[in-house]
Length: 391
Image 1 (spheres, helix red, strand yellow):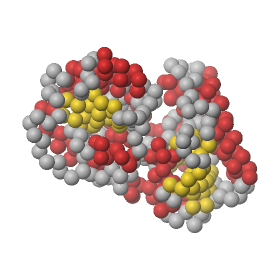
Image 2 (image 1 turned 120 degrees about the vertical axis):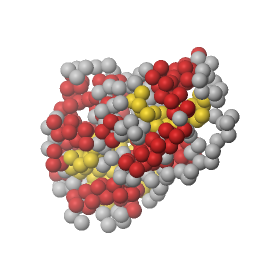
Image 3 (image 1 turned 180 degrees about the vertical axis):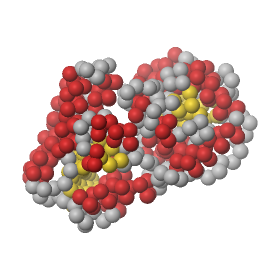
Image 4 (image 1 turned 30 degrees about the vertical axis):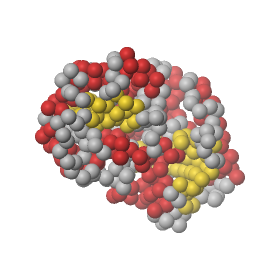
């Protein structure tokens, strides 16, 4: 058994990837301490599924400017640094999740003393900064973020990332390719299991579409709401359930009200734990992935898409570079990104063709869900950790 320290600038309960990783280590017989951010009302420390989670408050509940993010990142960096300064040799391995990448440098003392350190790159900071703050790739901040990304990757003993395209990008930016390992963001198949065959719906049953996750502009939910306004003319009793929380919630609700869709588009009461999601989408006819395409979203393989596929829910998706690496028109229904008319047309097509929905679902299950699943794939992670610590 090894004693492993993990840290992420996130709320532990709200981040499925870090939870899956930590719990995989516990299942393999290791002990895990995880440093994360605390939400108001949460205890400072608790044990969750065998993981000892230490929580720290940040500058504020939600940062809105680049300066606020940097200050909050530095505060979290110092929390990691102080914890490891007090216990430099307590842990046999350390796992730091980005963002930001520079958090990995808080481990310099145990790294100097020979403790292996993993940097887990969930997202590419240069692309996300450019997208969020409308900055080109030559902006000085974007260039600086690429440098700290490269230095962080070189500093770490090993680098994890979520998909082969990100591995290619990180390698091209100067991180040694042999250091980089791909651990996909696959859903926990104990939570997102394939649903049983649904009984035929009555003629007057609603046609249910679902979206769950973060409510952010880059994810295109405004386009989805506009598409509902168009498709309602053809699809009777259309229903879109939006499940989740995020900075766009108020604007999205205002758009819904402006289009008089209060009876068709519903919102959850904010954040919903991942364990509760399957019951809320179990009867869905279609899962929506209405992404805008940008340098950041084009390299994403949305976890919610994989969760729908695992459950057997047919999906409507845009043609991003990464989605098209894994899915084709025999597995998903494509639409033109940021085009509400095209999305409405895709909705109508699947409404009018229940047989096509079944074919798409079956093909996606056979060619993706049966090939990629967390129960098997998590060994990529646990084997890496155990190799680094010499077990």
